[in-house]
Each structure stands twice: as structure tokens, then as C-alpha cells.
Amino acid sequence: MAAIVIIPARYDSTRFPGKPLYPLKGIPVIQHVYENSKHARLADDVIVATDNETIFERVFIFGGKAIMTDRKHPSGTDRIAEVAASMDYDIIVNVQADEPLIRPEMIDDVITVLDDKRASIGTLTKKIEDPNEIADPNIVKVVFDKEGFALYFSRAPIPFQAPNSELQAFHCYKHIGIYSYRREVLVALAKMKPTRLEQIEKLEQLRALENGMKIKIKETFFETYGVDTPEDLERIEKCLSISL
Image (cartoon, rainbow, N blue to C red; front, side, top):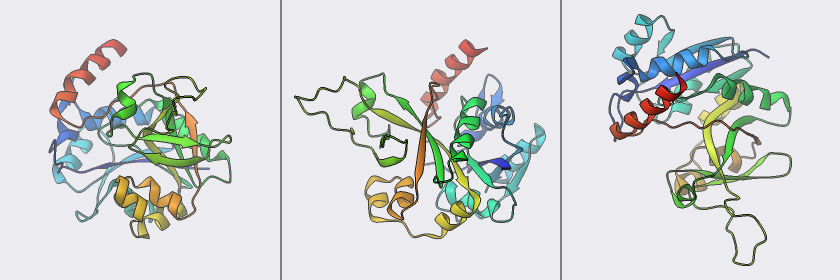
């Protein structure tokens, strides 16, 4: 199956406007994301989908591919769906533009998840090691069945660990926000109205679950951090220094 990585990149951000253009080690965040994505073995191409001319031009300056999209899209999912609708690729991978630490192996993993024909969407998870992340509402948790299909995503600590539970501490998994979609699934999902649980939790993936789509999970052992605030740049620069 042919696969393409589409990176939705918008300029406006409540907490950190213009973050795809900010330099890390002298290179824009979006370039780190793009070049890491290009090294994925199973992705045939990479393209940035943006609503901003400066981002569009910067991508071309470093030799990447970009396409302008509607400024009115409420989410990155809608943005990549616009691009995917005119393409013939079987699998669309959504890599966030603020994830400069994304690994090519993670992209390959999320593509292979869709080898299971029962899965409509693929994504990754990682076992939580820092206890502070369990109660952090900015860290999305996920529970899944014995075959790896997602049961629920939440900003709350799940599963709840009762006092007499025999489970080991930190038996919680966080969601790593990279997705693979079957093209027709992505296009259909973008046309669906926001659902009740999605609106409560502010998590788009719940729209898929509420509409009966099956999301398959694969565990990763790689850590990644997104750029949400200017303060995140310093932490990520340290991670980049260690990896160099």
C-alpha cells in the first residue's frame, strides 16, 4: 500500500504563534519534522499542508514540498483531509508540525499497524514512566483491548487503579499523537460532525471511536515532545544535542 506523510502546519497558535518557524539548533521546527519524516522507509513522500504563505515559502527554501490549504479548517485532521482527497495514496500519515523529535521508525510503525485489515486508523502509545504524567490533563491516556484496539482515550488517569488492585503501579499508557489513516476513512472522518465525548474531552480521536471506527494501537519505546510553548524549545534543544 502506498503511503504519504502529510504535516499540517498552521501559523496561528494561542500559546505560541508561528512555532513551526522557530529555530532549533539553527533549523526551523518544521524542517526538523520534515527531514525526520523523509527518512521513514515505508513513506513514499512527505508534504506540508499549511494555511500560511511564510511557512509555505520556508518549506520550499529548504527543498521540501508544501501545499496551501483553506484557512478556515478547525483542525489538522481537516487540513490533511483536504489534501488527501485529491491524492491516490492508500495510507495517509498525520505527523504534527510541532514534533521535531519524531522518529522515522515511529512513522514506519504506524503504517504497519494498518496491515491489520480490521483497523481503520493506526496510532502509537508508550508506557508512562513519570508518575506526574498520569494526572496531567495535557498527557492523553489510552486503554486498549488484548488485540491492541483502542477502547478509550482520556485526559483523566485511566485505568483507575483501585486501592486493592493487583496491577503494578504506572500501568498507564500515554497516547503518542501520530496517526495513519486509510484514505477513505480520513476523508469520511473529516466530514463528520464533532461528537459528544470528543467535545467533552477535546480529543478528535473520540469522534472516530464514537462512529464505530477501529483504532489500532502499537507500543513504541521512543519518547517525543511537542513544542507547545516557547519554554519547550530549551528542553527539545537538549534532546537534540544528546541525539547528535
